[in-house]
Length: 128
Image (cartoon, rainbow, N blue to C red; front, side, top):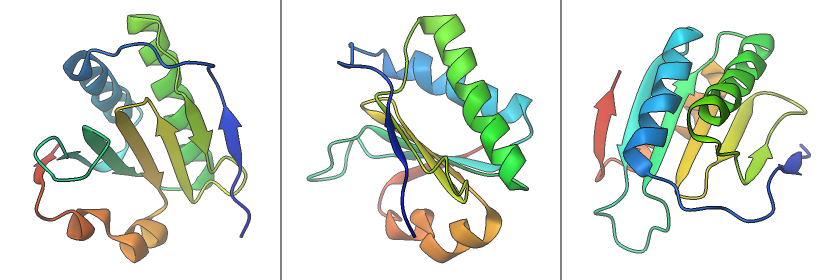
């Protein structure tokens, strides 16, 4: 399975985590993302990200809508673009890389298979 990777911006700018995180979660909720969780990685050893935000889409078009709306709302509210976007070709697992916040948009079966919450179960996990 080939993974599409699209570089969106040249150099990440400093991001205020809580503000961006709140905007991302709001966007996912507004477009009916399911089972939204925030995996707080800040207290984990040897991890370069602050947060993983994970949600489930009901279909490939829904995953694309979630991805587009997260980008749109984050840009509108903070003028930040993701550094990379991956997974737009198959839309089973889309990743938006906001440098220190990574957004994972899964189809149900893909999310169940990779089970990120279990993989990072030592981290603080918040559900929305």
